[in-house]
Length: 280
Image (cartoon, rainbow, N blue to C red; front, side, top):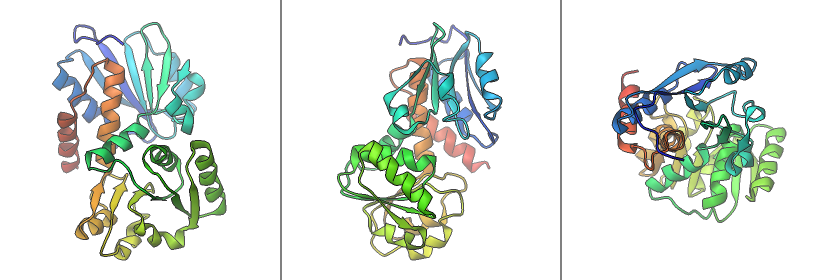
C-alpha cells in the first residue's frame, strides 16, 4: 500500500460499546503527530452491534480505517470484503483498512501484538503456558501461543461449556489445550508463561498465591495498573507484560496498516499512553 501523506485529509476511529475509556485515540493521534500526518484525525464512536451496519455503510472516501473493540469484533465480519487469515483463525477482527477502491479489509492485530509485546520482554519461545479465562481475548492468546509455545497450554475456566470452547479453539489453532477448573487457578503459576485474560478484579484473590519463583505474567489489563496480581508477580522478581504493552503494539500495527508507513513510532505512542493513564 502506498504511503499516505499529510496533504490528504484522512479519518480513522475506534468503535465499540462502551468506548469512552478507550486509549486508542491517544495512541493513534500521537503516531500522526510524530509522523507529520497533520491532516489525519482519529476519533471514538459509541457503536453497538445494531448500529454497526449503518455506521459502516455511511463511510465516505475520506476514511482510512477503523479499530474495533467489544462487542464488534465478530459483528463486523459480514460487512467486509476480505478477512486476513490471522483474523479468520479466531473469527475476530479488530482492524479494518478502508481501501481507496472502496474495499473493506479486516485484520487482527491483537495476535501479532501479543507476540511483539512478549518479544520486547525477551520471551520468544516457551515450553508450556497457562491461560486464565476463556473469552475472546483468550482465543487470541491461544492463537499467539500457537506460534511461540512448543508444549501444552492449560486453560483455567469456570464451566465445562467454557472448557469445551477452549479445547475447540485449541483443535482449530493446533494448540494442545488442556482445561482445569478455576478453583485450581493458582496452579497456573507453575507455568513459564501465564496469560491473564479476565476482567478487572477477577484475579485479585490469586495475588496472595503467587509463589517465590515465577516466570512471565502477561496481564492484559491496563487500568488500573498494576493489578494486584501483576504487583505480586513483580515483587517475586518475575517478568510482567501489561495491557498497555499489548495496546501499544497492536496499535502500532494498526497505524502501519491504515497509513501505509513502514514503521509506526512505538516510543511516542507508548509515552502518550503512559501519560494519559497517569492523568486518570
